[in-house]
Structure formats: structure tokens, C-alpha cells
Image (tube, rainbow, N blue to C red; front, side):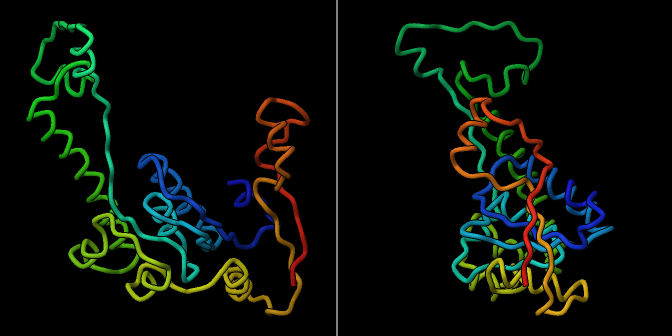
Length: 228
């Protein structure tokens, strides 16, 4: 958002190195990228890994650039809920509850899960998975059935993902920047200014910041460098 609001920024290259994470968080970033694209192009540059949620946000971009060795894809959903009912039983702890409905104790970690609980939990996961696959199908201009064949949690190299139509171009960060320059009509040999969000800091400063030491830099701050 800081880059989008900066009037001196003409195009954004989103560098992704992530194995994924929260489905909700990924969808929030996806929606933000979609909104930003209305005013500025956004290119995705995949680093070592862009899987699951990492790929989820990449597919929101105008163009996806992946290194041939990038681990990408993993279009799927993993849901895990801890249950300690067995452990409690081993130490002699029992749990009682007062409920007013069949689903009032749904996924209570202190009670054994019923078969109905497991089925309902799977339905929740299937909904998220279907939404993920459909978004991929829409962004890559594929039908749902063919996209599902590429999904199911499979991972691909960047090279294989390119062949499967999951990414647009093979290359690294510099290749993505060259494509970005071309997109905004800048000659390949023309020097441009790169702004990094958030500002890059060395490891020692990062450790100090973790413990509240040193300067409290705003996350929206950025550093700039010239690049030909």
C-alpha cells in the first residue's frame, strides 16, 4: 500500500519467498493487490519458494516471473486442529459440558471428535480449497477441471510451472525488473530508481528492533537505489 500511495512509484515488483500460511491472510493480500492493479501494474517475482499462500498472492499480479528452480504451486489446503482428549484421559482428567445444540461442542479440543465433526471439518476445508482453485483458474484463464489437475497440493519447479501455465516467464528478480521497465515504456539501458519496502536493514539492526532497541522505523519507510 505504501508503494501504491507513493506517486513517484510507477510499477511494483512484488518479491515472494514464502511457503504459504493463513488462507485468510493470503486472501487479504490478494484483494489488496487486485485493488492496487487498478492504478499501477504489479509484477510477481518468485524467489526460492512461492507455494500455497505464496502462489495465492502471486496469481493476483499482472505477470508472474519464476526462477526455473523456484518451488511453486502447492495449490491446496491443510487444516489441522489439536485435540488433547486422549492425553487428558491418560492422566485421569475428565471433561463435562453443558450444551444446547448438536454442534455447540464442534471441534472442542478437550472432547473426542465425532465422525460428524470430521465430516463438517472437511466441508470447511473443501470450501477454501474450491475457492483457491477457482481463483487460479480465473487468473490463469483455465477451466476448473484442468486447474484441479494441477492442484491437489502438488508442487512444481518454476520451469514445470511455466510449462503448465501457472507462471508467465522464467527468470530472476533482474528479469522481472527489466520486464517492469518495458511495461512502463522505459528503455532497458535507462537508469531507474528502485524503492524497497520496507527499508532494508542489516541483521544486527533487525535484532535490536526485535527487542525495541535503536530507532523505531516506520514499516512504510523505504530505501532507494539507482539501477541501470
